Image (cartoon, rainbow, N blue to C red; front, side):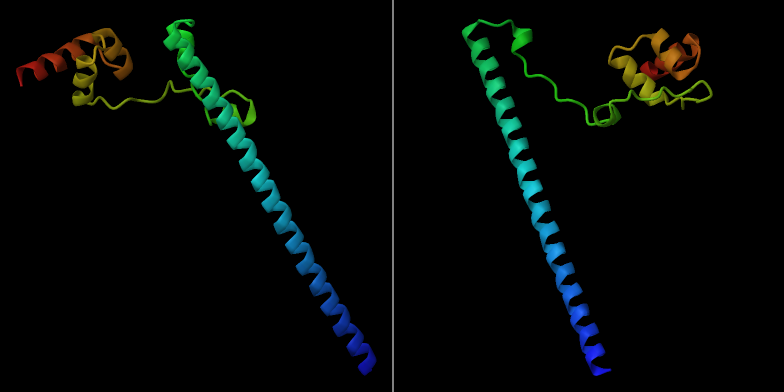
Length: 138
């Protein structure tokens, strides 16, 4: 009976060592994958920096139009970038917008039209004019 118990203890110890070795191998593999990812991202950053520097130098030398020399915008990190699927348009017909008079005045100050404000806030143009007139009087 003691031989059997010793065999079970030895098997248990062997399995524990195998699990430890497998965990260490996974950890090492993940570390290598992370480092490879970091290297590839850094190479991509360096390529972008070089490309932007070339555009800047070309613009300074006058060889490229101003529009072409500007740095490109980075890709969005939204759903489209991750999955390749377009975002779903929501049905917002039942939504209501809070009519914030201060916001309406601020948007008008920035150049929003009376018709645009009326459409966005879901009120009449006369109501927008009244809010703006009230703000001017205050």
